[in-house]
Image 1: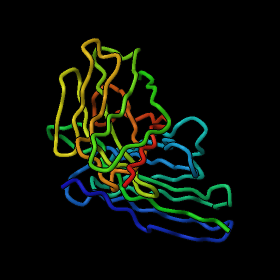
Image 2 (image 1 turned 90 degrees about the vertical axis):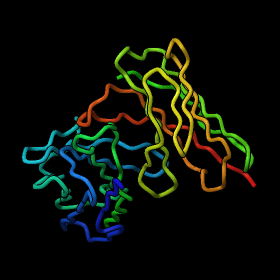
Image 3 (image 1 turned 30 degrees about the vertical axis):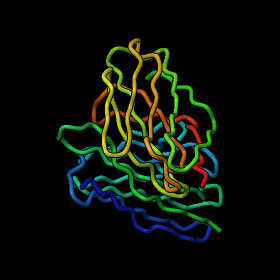
Length: 117
Length: 111
C-alpha cells in the first residue's frame, strides 16, 4: 500500500510555456502533500506544502505565481510551472502524508524530470 | 527541527551488514529520527523511524543511543539494490510537518 504516482515522468518543453505535473495518492487519502525539486547532485529542496482545500504554503524564495499548486481533492495535487525557463529544469518530486493511520510518514512519487529548452 | 550530520559516503560489501551513522546532538525530546533513501533518479523511499526505542522492520533496524544524540541504520544483508543516498532526518511527528533534507550518505554496495 501507500503508492504515490506522478505524471508525466518526463517532460521537455520550450521556454515560455507552462507545464502541469500531477501527483496522486493511489490507495490512501492525503490531507497534506509536499512539492520538492532537486538539482543534480543536490539534496531535495522543499518548495511548498499543500493542504486539501486551502492555499499552499510556499517556502522562502519560491515564487507562488510561478509555481501554482492546486490540491483539490484528498488524492490529487498539481504543480504548474508557468512560463518555464531553462533554469526551471529540474527533478520535481511530490510526497503525500497519509491522513490518519498509525504511522506518520510521507510517501514519495517517482519524480518528474523537467527539461526546458 | 534539529540538524543531523552524516558521513558523505560509505562502502559496503554485498551480503554484509551496512551500518550508517547519524549524529543529532541537538535533538529535542519530542523529535523522531526518520530514515529515507533515494536511489538514483527516483523519489525517496521511507525506511524506518523511531523516538527512543530501537526499531526493526522488513527493511532495516534503527538503533538509537540512550541519550538520543546519535543513531545507526543497519541494513543486515546489503544487496546491490541498496546502493542509494540515505538520509537521516529528525523532526516532530505530525503528518503536516515538513522534512528538511541534508546531503545524506551515499552508500555504495560492492559485489
